[in-house]
Length: 296
Image (cartoon, rainbow, N blue to C red; front, side, top):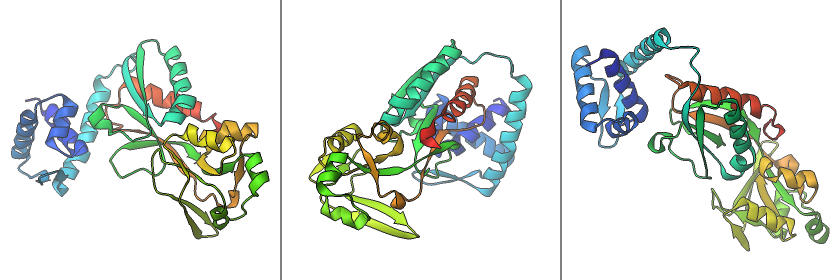
């Protein structure tokens, strides 16, 4: 058994959290991964993981070995890599539906025009996909990140915007505080979170508006269409509503209560052994999104 290969398998188990997930990631059988770990533990004379029925947790000795193994493998990769090799191969990227359609797809198109030997599969959807399980190289995520072991590259931030059409506000009046929303028709978007409540914050105080909506939609374009038609007040992320806000078909409300901005990040499983095509896309995307005023 190649000693470097043992360390690669060990780190894959650590990152994936289980033998089965590591085997899937590496394209090996679970029994082979189990055998390699047993051999490594026998070689170092230490228990590297605590086992449970669902997950493996690294011991203190395992974490120390992991730190040393990463340095060793990185040095090895740098020693044998061809730094002038052109990026090539398939890159699988996922992003939220509206953001992906409006912003990520154009970035991907320009990236492919620069790198003719790369192919990209862009998967759009509003549910966060597990990168390891689905074989995803890179995801664009909006909002706080869970502690998942993923590496993040921050692009900027967006905000939740409350909005309505000028015609609706002329007919029903403009709410000055979140509490006044109780007097209005509210349109609930349920694409990601289906709770019938909106949260606001100002001067260190949280305002929670709970309501029974007459209209619920699981698609943000439907929410915006209903607001544009004058049915009621809606909430959306700033990049989703940007065309309507710029055109004046919808106007922002309660700006003083918007609360904290939501971070926009590129996330990927590991910065270690990053394929040239992935590194090239991250650098390209960071540069492109820096010009996008929607995520300052």
